Length: 579
Image 1: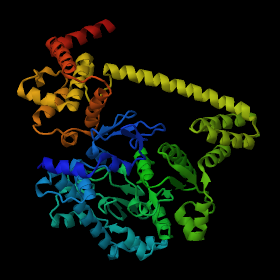
Image 2 (image 1 turned 30 degrees about the vertical axis):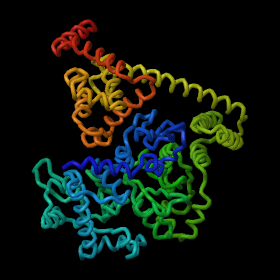
Image 3 (image 1 turned 60 degrees about the vertical axis):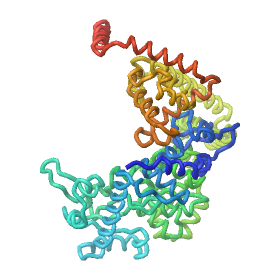
Image 4 (image 1 turned 180 degrees about the vertical axis):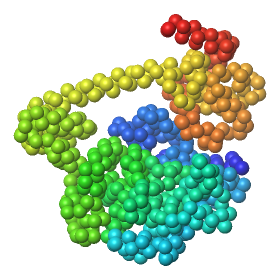
């Protein structure tokens, strides 16, 4: 069931787009608009623009766009109903009873299902068969308070213990499978518990909803950790373990650990600003989520080679998200959990206070690989360090670290500076060449994932986009089309995407709102539609004569549109000539 239009309008009226987005992005006034660094892709020069007059946003870098509803869908990883509910709560509005769509009911059911599963696992931790799990947790120094705080549990070593419990509560096998609480055998078709004989770590979102689970094997079970895959309420790449605790204590910094046990140990030692990724390498989405809550991240990864490699991968991702990155040097322990158990919270705080900057850490990692007393190895070390310096955006910061590195490896700074400048010129040339190819490709419609028909007739597709952009800016023209004063029909459009957008525009009788599109169009499609509006808004003329010119162009192209058989004949002829 759809939300009433007047309710959507009230939600948007109470949630001014510039106010909502400013809580995620540092916006600065730019004329009548606002600009900031895009929260949806890595950039250093602001290309993200908010247009208060049209209540839309658009990033000229990655192309993301929409209204305040679209923004919340992207920023909070929510479907359309969830974004409406999020904004309604923010504005203190009561959700209408008729507005609870099937999608909202579905998400609510998955939240309830996961909560019941978490309760089941937690109760099972006190069963006799969970003695080994309790001993393991005690051996790792986890108190009953830690178990309770993080809702830890135990999955019995049974193929149907959880299934039977969930069946009694009215949940079916298919929805349990979708929630990754059950699996299904390809050979027999039988359903089975996904987590078996494991310590369970519930994953909780910022709204206190249980969205997923992680399971640690006991003994030598493989894999050591088993994690939920993506579900309707969980995206692994956009979720951080224990952020529900850390977000209220991370104004100064976040401590990024590798695993669940490290986070729990750090948290219980008095540092509630610790989080971890969920069994995967750090993603750009996770980095941007952290940037919403803090400006500094302290990497507290394992001290082994794998931990160092993971840290080296994470540093540029965090830096691109605009975060200051620090590293802790752990000696005498392989991870934060072991360090705290051996040396205590006070020593760990000293580690945090003495954390090193990223360049010192990376430089140490390079110099460990090479013996710089050997000329060949010194050259290789210098090349790696030169590449690292090229990644630094600030000229001043690059100069400071260049001098420090040259002092450590006894190289003339002027020589190193010339090498860095040469590499940066080569990189810039490659970026420029790539950008030129991208612009040409986009202008011809190649690789267009939103409007796949664009490449078939670029001239007609551009006319369609111009028409739609003008109609978005001048809704009175849409009313004239409905009344027959302007001759334009869905069949005049050549691309399927253009037809869908035009149909949505003319079918809406009242005041058209871009936010409504998010109900039936994907976020990439909404972004493309907003771009059409933004492109037309930059032009000085969007009057009736301009609209009619584009309509004539479209109709002329539509009249001479070849049939599918003719297109196949042309393709076959081209293939024959190639051969």
